[in-house]
Image (tube, rainbow, N blue to C red; front, side):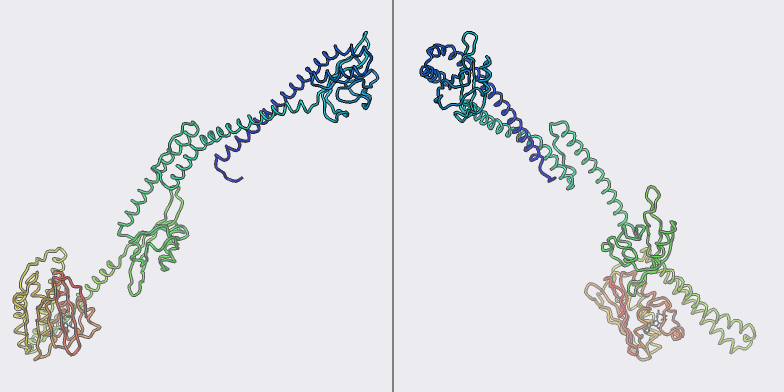
Length: 597
Ligand code: ADP
């Protein structure tokens, strides 16, 4: 059935009811009126027949037909009806509107038949004489207890019908007026019923659009008021529930977003349910772009895939360390996986918590390497010292020349041990103080610091025939820790002297570079091949180990420089061309990142 507005369902129904009721009432009223009119007409005809019947005897008694006929016509004119006199044999004696000569005997007419039997009779039937429907009343004419004829009066039905038809027209007009008024009333009532429902519908649509703070007006009809009130209550409860759910969701989202650990939830098919931003970084995915996709499509990692499947199959928690590749970068991610359960303890997926342990593992490796390096660095001089002490013990001590040489080697190895330990201590002290932010920085001019560093190595430089040139404006200042900066410059200068040939020159230049200050140490020594530059500042890293050791290097000098400058918030860079020389540059107070050009 077609969906229509309630108004257009109610109103036509009402209208139909009104029309049916009015038509039925009017029809029955009209029928009752017509019957009554017929009865009245019949009664009136009977009265007229009675009156005429009383007067007919004298013309009849004359025995002259013409007189009877004249009486009939006169009576018909006065009574407004047709008058017929019929003899007992059925022959028409006189007739007001026809020549009786041309009329057939009337004994077969039912009313005549009855009257001849002595009873007044009425009939409504077709008149063959006049060819129209007529109402007849026939009364017996008696003389001396004998029926000597029948007087019949008649009236055409068309006259009666014309009278009733006028009434019918009036009834129909009245009915139309009533129907019109009733239809208007029905329209009003239909509107009165449908209007509050339409308002409820409009309100419910607003609820559906999410306007849950809207409230429906309560109509003054009990049932509709209950509906409106129930809808209002429902909207209120829904609003409250949505607020609670939204606030929970926001809390959860905030918790997930502020977590350092990456979190991913998947359904039993491995499809992503939710993930936070912290999960995106170590797995190299954009959390916003994953949607409802399968985890193994988003992160192509067989270890992770196996872990998720294991947890979903076994139902127990599991842990694994997986490596994730993103281009050249490899990240190590620790994953804890547990089954997600609903309140009925049914498995609804798995929860994965990710910790990027790349830095931790790297640090562990650096520490392990460092311990291995330190052990190795210390082992070499100690083995040497032990070896020579053993040799001396075994008799070499009795050979003064040999003994003296061995003792010198032992002394030199001891110095080496000392240097390594001093450098290590210096390095760890600087690292520790920098970490605790305990290295005080104060504004000071750089020139005296550079001169002090040069003074430390002046004698060595002169002994090797290396000239040191200083180019530092007297007013150039920066926020520095004087003794530490001096140590850093001294270390660079020490290397420059070590790796320079006799007769070459070293230049120390301090200059302002925009916001920053740079101090560069330039030599014309052996230079460093490019492939070594990225790792040059690592602890114990040497380009040529044997040469470094021979020159008394510990492999820690540049590492100390890097840490000192980092504590200043600055950086160190190096440019070098093998065979031509190297330039180490300290960048201060600008926080320029460490770049090895
Ligand atoms: P070392 O004590 O061995 O000098 P450093 O940390 O000071 O340790 O230096 C690391 C390595 O860098 C050195 O072994 C050397 O090979 C190289 N190097 C440092 N400075 C220079 C330089 N001015 N010229 C050439 N090579 C250098």
